[in-house]
Amino acid sequence: MSAPIELNLLRSIKTGKGLIKLITNLKKSRRENKLGSKKRLALSKKQRELVLEKTNRRCHICGIELDINNFQADHVMSHSAGGMHLENNYLPSCSTCNNYRWHYSSEEIQIILKLGVWAKTKITNDPVFGVEMANEFVKYEMSVRKRKRARQNKKTE
Ligand SMILES: [Zn+2]
Image (cartoon, rainbow, N blue to C red):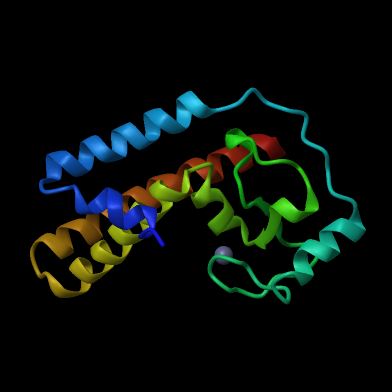
């Protein structure tokens, strides 16, 4: 049995520059493998119910409770990588998880999760770099919220 792909990829990384190169190459590879857009078919209410029941009405990523009117059908294999718009390729997710998962490859998601857990630990344990990172992150989040509000206001005008 082979080791999980993430371990093989990260084991070869010895420097920050190496990590940046890996992330850049994974992004490049995802874009090169991107398939042309196929028409997206909306799931029927019955199909959405079946997708939602796969996880007992919880987001398959964070586990938050979902309801039929408030969940997104997330492609297990991303649409851009050739994942089909079929019931068996969907799992229910909340909008936050689905939006952040985007169409990253499995390898990219694993690196992002590791970076996120590492950053969270730094924020709570490192009084200098962690606090600086927390401030930058909050600044970023506030700008995202501001842009989102501006978009919503534009829609209601
Ligand atoms: Zn979620």
